[in-house]
Amino acid sequence: MTDAALSTRVAAAREERVVGSNAGVRYLLAAIAVFISALMLAPVVLSFFASIKSKADASATPPTYLPHSFSLENYRNILDYQAGLWTYVGNSLLVAALAIVLVVALAVPAGYGLARFRFRGKEVLFLVLLLPLMIPYQSLLIPIYMMFAKIGLANTHIGLAIIHAILQIPFSIYLMRNSFEGVPKELEEAAVVDGGNSFQLFTRVALPLVLPGVVTIALFAFITSWNEFLAALIVMNKETLFTVPVMLVSVRTGHLGAVDWGSLQAGIIVSIIPCVLIYVFLQKYYVSGLLSGAVK
Amino acid sequence: MNLGRRNLLGLAYMAPALLFVAVFVLYPFGQLIYTSFTDASLLGGGKWVGAANYVRIFTGDPQFWKALWFTLKYTVIITPVLMGLGYALALLTAQNDRVLQFARGVIFMPVVIGLGTSSLLWFWLFDQQVGLFDKALVDLHIANSMIVWFTNADWALWAVIISVTWKVVGFGMILFVAAIQSISREVVEASQIDGAGYWQRVSMIYAPLTLRTVLLVTLISAIGSMLAFEQLYIMTGGGPRGLTFTSVYWIYQSAFIKFQLGYGSALAIVLTAIITIAAAIQIFLTSRSAPQ
Image (cartoon, rainbow over all chains, first blue to last red):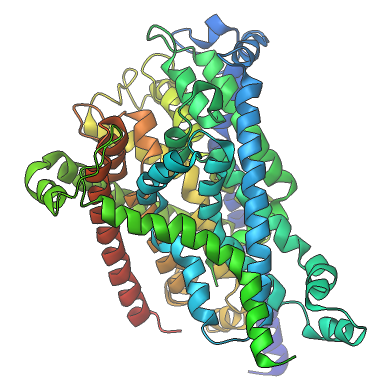
């Protein structure tokens, strides 16, 4: 084969890439992709439509896909549900904020220590930090609950945040170790020449360079904490301490056996919004974090 | 800086995290083992009872084994569904074309929604009176009338599988896309120059070169399914007739509803052991079949 012929075939192959070469196939694939996207969006969109129906409309049989009229009745109802929606959203936000603080405060220095120092036993200690991956937290909830009851952490925001932090620690340390290892050592060495001590190197030189990593672990901590259900169900026994997912289940249970479907949909939308906003606006951090955490 | 000091400094940076894991993971794990040999309950107690709890698991608690069996069935059905669909979606959207990238973003979106929330959302979609999923099936002439999903254990299982698939299929997809995209262009182009068709390329190039990722995601996914709780707690409540309890759900039920913390601990140990052994076997097989 001549060079020219080869290069046209290479060009043709490039053109083709992953799927078929002709435009028809490509349009067909795009159409299928759009159709699947619509299917995937449908549940959330229908839930949103149901949430803006009137209360009666939302429970009507047979149901309708689209709202007949616009009403904020369901959102008003959920705002006034038991202790009030803001109490539950506040609980969830406070727990998530505490979980973020714990995860960042623990994982960032640990990642730095792992990336920048060489000492015997380091890899063993790294494995110890990854242990929460190997022991399912579902089975740890019994002893943790007993411990919390003894030391006064049951029914506290910080107690639940500690459990959520356990879930995120291995991934976060792993990611921070990789991030710090990606920072050229020369930068710190230059700072040593300028007379910085180790802690200054860490906070002033290395830390600013790994901020994307810090944002990523904070994001994951938020989403995990905001969504976590089982620990919240076990640790938070007082109605006023419920987090949003636990509140939603009690909305569903309803009064006198009848489910208030409209309020439930309004609650579902409220619980989805922060996650989807974060995902849409910070997708870069989220997906890159997921990939670096799972693939390597 | 001398070596001894650097040792200490490195340790100092890791110390808070190590302490945290020691106090909130290692110590509770020790407590879990200890408690499993006692009759501890939420109402007090805590006397050493030897292996009595374990004897009871193996001789006097058929419901646990039923729950474990159900969990296994759930895992064995949903894992290939998630891997197969996830891989198909990855093949469909792996190109960096704008429409396909958008589709990828949308398919992944439910991953960030809570499992509790998505289970409630689908509980509504599956409702036999107001459920729009049921109504869509009727309108499309797939079903004659609104299906009652949760009074039959098999139907309930499929309802849960549909809802969880919607929620997590994007997770595998995004990792598979990354694996497919990381295959070097040269390899793909060489196969095209040699005249390999699309399906040939999928089976001879993509599949073997992404096998490691597929096995890893299978492991993560299967462990997650073996620990299923929310989706059943919310959608079926363990019913009908206790046929859809999962292992974790039964542990929760024993420890926190029936107040038997000691017995619940023993169940948790047994479940952890089963999952650890299964995972170890899979990791062993993986390292043999995909050396890299």
